[in-house]
Length: 114
Image 1 (cartoon, rainbow, N blue to C red):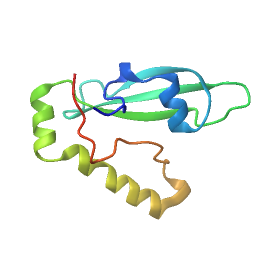
Image 2 (spheres, rainbow, N blue to C red):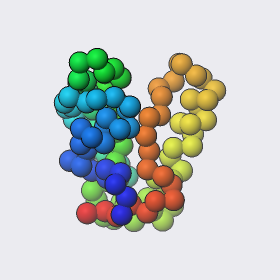
Image 3 (tube, rainbow, N blue to C red):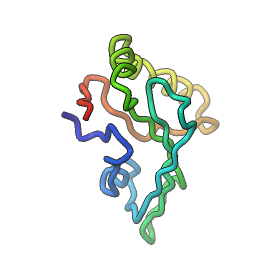
Image 4 (cartoon, rainbow, N blue to C red):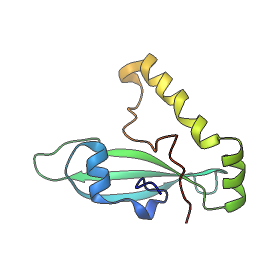
């Protein structure tokens, strides 16, 4: 099992801090596009940092769907593994005009769903 959070409830101050390279004091999770995602859950994470530590005010986190049948389809067609490379490619081409990718589950890690 990976230590990468697979559900919004698994996010921790420590994981966010390590991923963002800053000391996280607190964070708030907001649902984006309720009911819109067939294979995933998108959340905006608003971050407050410890004094003297800095990072983005918010980040977007994407998690696998809670719906088992949809996860089977996503895994069968490697939808989770194929989602990140286009973002990486666009970020390389657009530079500062594109959001920075700050963390992702390694493609070779098989995520265990709970």
